[in-house]
Length: 120
Image (cartoon, rainbow, N blue to C red; front, side):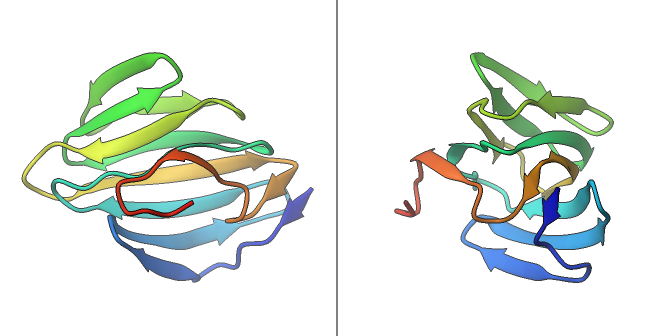
C-alpha cells in the first residue's frame, strides 16, 4: 500500500476544489466541492476503489454504464477501472466525501477519457 496524499493538502481545479481530510495506511478521505454547471473529467483509476457520499447539492453521476441523479445521503461505490464522473446539475455547490481504498492512492492515478477543460 502506498498513500501519497497528506492530510490538509488541497487544490483548486477548474470545476471546484478538493481537500484531504484524513489519510492512513489503507485509505484517503477527500472533501470535494463541484461548482454549479461544472463537471469532473470522465476518468478511471487503475489502483483504487472510491466510495462517494453526497452531502449537499444535486449531481449527475456516471458510474460505468449507469447514469443516476444523486442528492444528499446518496452512497456510490466506484470500483477500480470503472469509468466515472460527477456533474453538478443544480444551482448550489455539490459537496461529497470520497473515501479511497487500494494499493496506490495518488493523484496521478487518473486516466482521463473526456475533459471539458482540455486536460489530458
